[in-house]
Each structure stands twice: as structure tokens, then as C-alpha cells.
Length: 183
Image (cartoon, rainbow, N blue to C red):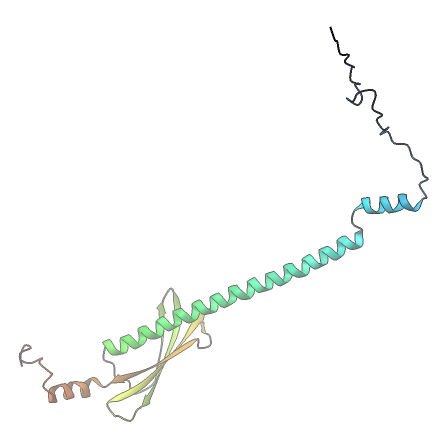
């Protein structure tokens, strides 16, 4: 019967004893003043204080720039919101002139509370080529702390004289107010 011999594995290296295993224990074969040790240790030390300070300075500059950019963005969003709301207020003032058939002969200024804010509405009247029409420029400024700020929007509308418009409608047979709506 052929029996094979098995050798026990070494507990140290888990390799057969016939294989030579290099010794892994630390045995210095050079002095600490040698250049190779200094180079190895320098690369293993990490960053120097100067390198860390430069990296932090660069990070601080980037953080400040990002903060200023976001602040400018938020400021522009607030300005655009104020202009949009002011434009709505100006359009509402123009609609009121038309609905109430107001014929302005002089400039008018009023304070209104719309869109959750207080506004100063200035209406400036100018003549047109036709005496039956007036050009009205409506300027709107926000009121902050009781004081009107600078104008943020303005629109120009043309309004007609309601008396002239009703006399023209009667002239053309379009005014049916006195006979109940029949021609």
C-alpha cells in the first residue's frame, strides 16, 4: 500500500517547511540619518502646516464668493417680485379708471394697499390729439416704513371721456338706455 506522507503546516506561516519564508520582522539595516529614511518619513508625514493654511485660504475665498453670489441672487429675486406686484397694482389702477369711467383733468396721487403691501400710485394726465381722449401715465412706488420709495414700474393708458363716448354712441344709434334695449 502506498502511503503518502503529509507534513504538518507551520503555525507561523501556514506554508510547508520546505519553502523558505522571508523573515518579516523589522531589522533596521540602515541608520536614521540616511537620506532614504528621511525621504520615506517625509512622504508618510502628511501635509505641512503651510499646505493646510493655503488650502483653508482657498476654501474661504470660494465660500465668500458663493455667499455673495447667492446674496445677489436673492436680492434680484426680491426686486423682481416687487416690480411684478407693482405692475399688477398699476394695471388695477388702469382698470379702475376704465370701469368707473373716470375722466381725469388733473394729476392724482393716492395710497393703496394691494398685494399685501402699501403702494403710492401717481397718475399723470396729458392731452392727446383728440379732445375726447386723455393719456394717463400711472407710476407705482412701494411704501416702506411710511415713506414712498422710488418708482418701480409705470404704464401708460388712453382713456376716453365718458360724456363724449355716450354722445357718439347716441349719434350712431348705439345708445339704447332709454327704450329698454330695442333699436
